[in-house]
Length: 105
Image (cartoon, rainbow, N blue to C red; front, side, top):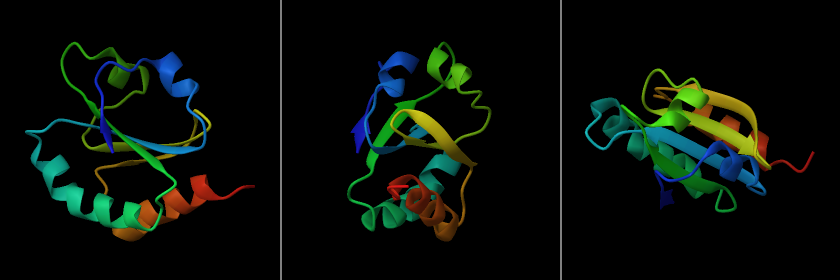
């Protein structure tokens, strides 16, 4: 997992392979509560890059991705969004989305 607030949309669009971008904030209780299921789901997908983006006032990237609630997980394949989950509370839903971006179809 990588913590990065300096990425821009071009950086994200140039990512290769399966990636999940997690928009949130360290102080967000919803984000804290979701960490265990996000981490557990990712264990089965070591090939998926996990990038955490600190979102909030003045952070344009979250606005460009129309993030309204935290955490928001954006699932990408080669920089293209295939799905997203907002405030996930179900490990299976995260696993399903990870499976979708990990398939070589």
